[in-house]
Structures are given as C-alpha cells and as structure tokens.
Image (cartoon, rainbow, N blue to C red):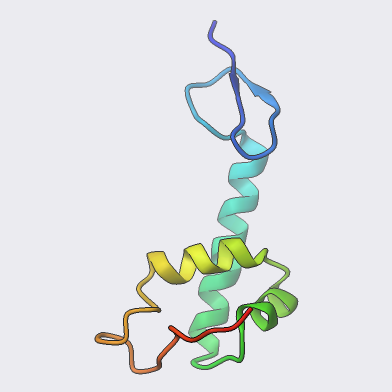
Length: 85
C-alpha cells in the first residue's frame, strides 16, 4: 500500500491521487461557485471583491480566470487584464 501526502492540506492518503477527497470536494465546490458568479456577473471591480462575495481565495480566483481565458482580451468582450487585488 502506497501512502501519499495531500498537496493541499498535507493529510495522508492511500490513493494515487495528489489531493485528498476533502480537498477535491472543496475545489469542485469553489469552481462551481466561480462558474455561477461569472455566469451572473459580466463585470466586477477586483479579485478581492469576487473573493469577498464568493468566499473563494484570491489565488484560486486568479487561477480560474487564467484557465478560462477571462484574461484574454482578444476573445473576451470585457477586459479583465487590469484587475486589481
């Protein structure tokens, strides 16, 4: 049996995954919150404002924005590249 350490919380897990079930569930929940937020809000002031509204950490929001091409001005109707923290 191989024991790994969760890369997010540090707890020990016995699967081949890099994160535990608890962190995976939280990650999925955060992504759902952000998807719903961006579906309902086409503009916003800052990553801090999104974090205060959703409860999601700013680093996760920034990662979500980059992964979903919200920072790409060529394809996005709203410019998100100058978002302040």
